[in-house]
Image (cartoon, rainbow, N blue to C red; front, side, top):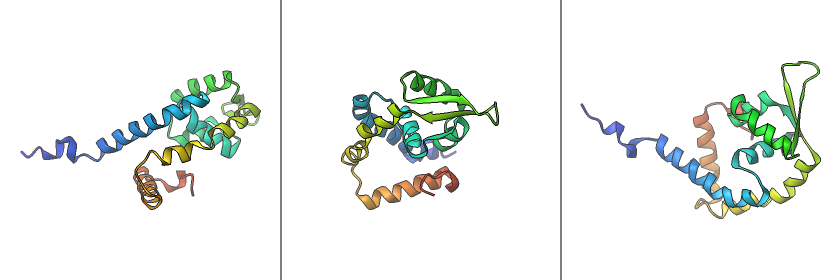
Length: 147
């Protein structure tokens, strides 16, 4: 039996995993400056764009389950970045809303994408191609924030 398919160098999953970890590592010093973890940062990016949405909607956009989101949002709420409340129309649904303090944090975060782009050895066209390929792998263009 040929086991070459099991070599780590033949796996697409490994460079994706390693790149993900490397990108998060690159973000860390910039996010430390504004007091956010990477997961908090991506949640804030959605809130800066949408201002308010349900926990379920946020989870769908970020590919995170409620078990991951609930403690994350609770901590962000205690930091004053967002508020959580039950939807009056559907008590089962929790609405997450950006606070003024959360909105103000956007001013500190606005330069982070530019700083990261200087750390990643891809030109603009390569970045665009990679972005589209990654969303192709995710397989659901309706969840693509650019659509």
